Length: 252
Image (cartoon, rainbow, N blue to C red; front, side, top):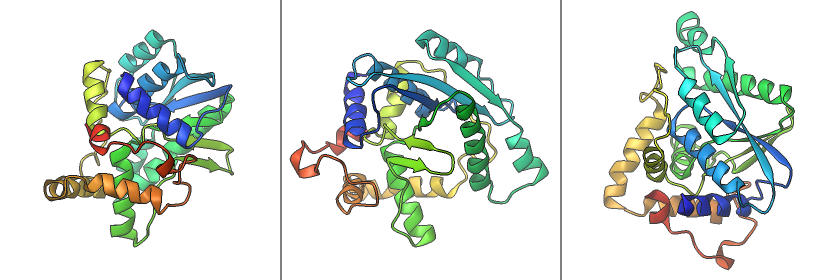
């Protein structure tokens, strides 16, 4: 926890994600990533020099997932929890029978999430994207769109006034999974029919194969994204002026 909190704090500082007095919503899907993010931000909150508060918001897709263990975990942390019930899942998979459901699903979930935030006077949300997600998204854009692109560490959405932050970009997926197991986080089974059958899963599997031949491949890709840099990816502290991140530590 201490090591991963250090990586989260470094990421938060590098991209100036948190300001004093921030009220931050954590988009809590019930998966290991968002639950680990909540645990890490809650731990960081205890000593970070810029005081902030947390709330957790879950968008229930209407797929029969039980979020009561998640609600109990938030209560244990003392973090207010809100469950927004929707029919997004049945609408996409049963009514519309979308062939490419992920894009529309993400848009509808984001709309429900932002509405819930507005009702609570929250304008900043922390999302559970990690180090591996960033590398995979970069390759997805390159392979399928022919673009050099990725989501940004900090994104301001002018239409809604919402700022999205991604504090776990220096934490690898394997480390997230280990943390979830050690803390016995209440991970909810994903009942999405499209789970594990997406283009992202294809890229994830390809990276596993390539890592066998090029063990530091993900580290090099991530470093190139910062050094190039992609729009909004250059840290506020120059890379050469700070201790370089250890790729293996981030991944393990």
